[in-house]
Length: 415
Image 1 (cartoon, helix red, strand yellow):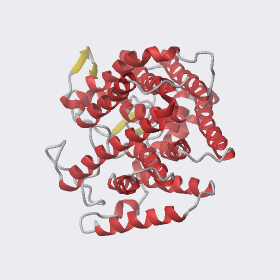
Image 2 (cartoon, rainbow, N blue to C red):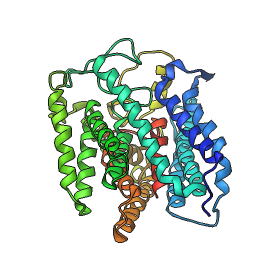
Image 3 (cartoon, rainbow, N blue to C red):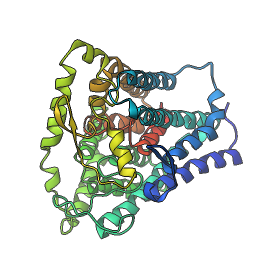
Image 4 (cartoon, helix red, strand yellow):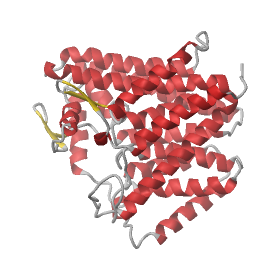
């Protein structure tokens, strides 16, 4: 049943944007913290729990209806449950409470996305407007980050210039330069989808699409470049008209050329990263070292106890990116890959449900192609699929919870 637009829609709509603006504009170090022994929880992260409680009543809508949303919910819930169960094998029992906290936040960031999508059932007529507004808000946030990046002003007192990019890489309280492009790709997809569907005002979507495309480059993230290439490749394979794609790419390249006096592109010419390569290599060595590890994993935190380093960082300590593992020697302190985290620490038993999540998104795309429905959801699904190659290059879901929450909102609202 589709209800008329009411003040309740505006209330819940506004709540989501208020929380996202809070995450985006207030660095975690400036927000209150709850400290329990060695467990340090920022209010910025704990606000995800508040969102869950606010949207919990929507859980009871359409309980009899089992869809792809519920498949994805159960699959990721199983992964988190298996990770929690694997803590029985953790070597340093002292850090179990911190590990449990990270897993709880990982699950809640997914669950709040599910609840928000359920709230849209009451106002399905306006669901497209919600996702478009969300993308426009995020686009404006990225513009603020870009201003800070180019002019070295904003959330940090000291700019950190990346020599291979020529400027400070685009980043902000919402996420670092290595991870924020994870949702930029989806924002780009939504804005581009509105442009393709001739949504008015068309000028707004032309400008915001171009700006978001440029901002992806300003992150200096090579995975962002892979994501945008994959996005257009999927669109071409879906046999949509490529004329607009070519025009858009030409405009983005032209603007980037204009910015060449202050921006370098050396970073995008070199994809080599020796430390990261060694981490991947050693991770695969652990996976293949025994059948038991291949199937069940090494155990959450037994290879990359990254949450220890995160707590040290929140205490104001300087932390190194390098971690010494007693089994394989030096590694990056976290795997920099969702798939590596799943395979090495949680085993094949967790990779299978994650692949089912991917298959569910592909299934949605096939349905939309079959009925030739090229609405906003079509472009979001393409955008979501474009983020999967990026999961080989950085760790989401288990950390970077604010970014992950927004990704889950887009996923559940479009499936």
